[in-house]
Image (cartoon, rainbow, N blue to C red; front, side, top):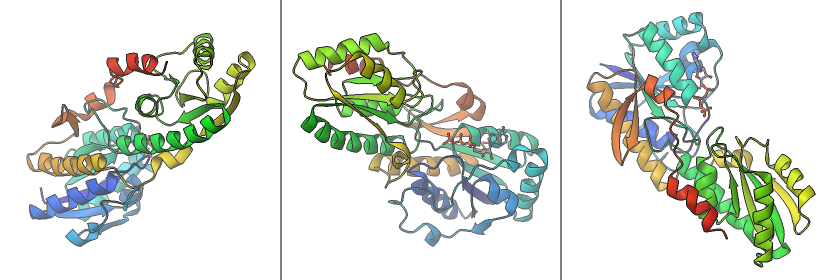
Length: 325
Ligand code: ATP
């Protein structure tokens, strides 16, 4: 092992910068070269890379996004694209990659590494969705959840002032992790998750019961992967069956992806970046570094891609219905 390339790919997530910083400084500490690859896999193909120093990553712990930029790169899906990437890596003397991203990023890394096994690859789970196997948390999930909670608190103020019913759509793709945790944190009256279908009739009944119990506002969180469509669709159906509140819809959208990483994500990013370099030094490849039970754990990329663990804790699921009565 002599030189590591580091890249961020797919959707950006807060915590990527602390992770890049940890990769760069751990590599340099061990007298390894480290090259920053711009725009994910696109930078490998376009040869858009630069040698990084300890100072390249100064004062970035608190930045959201990623200093290396990220991209969705169609060319890397082709054999020709991969070959160009391989040649560019070889020409720079890079013999290992740390890829920070989600499942698409890992799928690409695994394919590439099977084709060119002389380039070792270690993945770091970077996505706000928390939808990868082999890790309890992915980078950015905690920050995104906090961002949603902050928004919900603000919406509660205005909802309460006007006796309103709000439907709030939150991100997470097919995962309800952000929805569940943010909903419990902000006392949502109902949380609609992709993992557990909510019957509209039951939702309407519980909203009516809330009104009967003198609730002055109600917040229903709709995870973007919910089977009913989106928050507008759910609001439309409910509106026809309930006349008690003035109904409003808010789609939180991309603000959930931005912002300064939380302390949790800064620590997780640092920990996983550090672990990724140590794994490469130990001769590992085609693995993902993750956090399981508050310890760093290695999982094969295949396993990380296969196991979409059900990460909604049983007690949280029970609580969401009981604590909002
Ligand atoms: P997020 O979950 O935040 O969207 P992601 O890593 O899943 O992140 P994708 O856009 O799915 O995001 O994947 C990132 C990049 O990985 C793609 O733009 C592409 O360059 C590469 N990639 C994805 N799938 C493959 C594949 N089957 N073969 C080669 N490369 C791939």
